[in-house]
Amino acid sequence: MSTTLMPVRASDRFESIDMLRGIAVLGILMVNIQAFAMYWGTFEYPPAHMDMSGANGRVWWITQVFFELKFITLFSALFGAGIVLMVGEDAQAPTALHRRRMLWLLAIGLVHGFVFWFGDILVPYALAGFVVVLARRWSPARLVVWGLVAIAFSGLLMVGAVWAEGSMPGAGEPAKLAAHPTQEWLERWVGAYQSGFLQSRAYNAAGEGFALIGQITLFAGRLLGVMWIGMALYKTGFLTAQWRASVYAAIGVIAVGAGVSAEWVTANANLASGFAPEFQWVATAVNYGASLATAFGYASIVMLLAKPALLRWVRLPFASAGRMAFTNYLTQTLVMTFLFVGPPGLGWFGTVERSGQAAIVLAVWVAQLAISTVWLKVFRFGPAEWAWRSLSYREAQPFLR
Image (cartoon, rainbow, N blue to C red; front, side, top):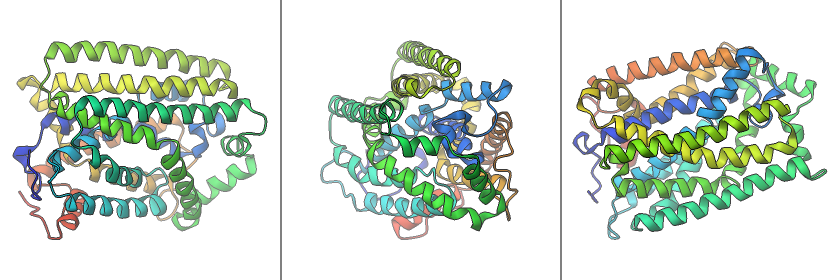
């Protein structure tokens, strides 16, 4: 494992990690599109904006059961693994490059979040990166233990906050108003986004500030914990497809079966209750825990698929998307902003129902898989990866293959 300041070479890459990262960045969009296309309060109270009947309700159910929190968990674990892969475990390994990478990621994230989209994950990732790297020498067991402690701590905070909001009179009134906006406020929000890019930026910046507070307080423990566990999974060879196929298969069946079953029952109960406020702390707790199991199961299935040589042609597009994950993540924002924010964009905000959003996601998946595969036949990196590397290394990196 290299501890120098040289870039990671193509020969040093792991196809299994690239493929899982590609699947993660694509899966994230299925959840994120809701915040691009309609009022953000629908994350807490889905009926707050747009229709929830028929196909639209089924799309919400599929997103909740199979996507919500699962793919961001995979992405976070891979971010932690990537830190060990690049910096190494040697206590004497230089970390100046890592610090520059995180500083540039922070700068890019601030622009991305406050200017383009309030759902940015780059800022919390960059901040977490400064902390997570300090644990790179820990044993896998220690990483898992402290990771679970951090995850549990965040879980208690999040579930407690939701319980207080739904059960204690007056305790969560600001959040309740945000999730249950008046018609006047909703029309004002939709109107701003449909009017134009500049007209909607104040709303976006306010949303980013609110999101950052939640990420740094309620969600920080989960983010750090998942990254530490990602480090452990890399060190044990799990993420490089070194475990036995039978083990991956068993984990995949058990973990996905348990996680999806729990989410299935809870999502149905939520729909049946009309998203009753007093039930939301239960739904939050189940999703918080079940998403970890489901994500672990998803990763196991991907590792299993990474083994057969005959499936390499199937893996290539996803691995290519993973090698360009930074570019694909930012491109998703640009495409969604063009579609849903007004001039110079199309201003579809508040007009595309959940079923239409799912169709858009499928189209973006196909496009990014195809473009990533073709792009990397000509170029070494995606454009965002190249820019980030060049800024971090303080010199232009080779771009053409």
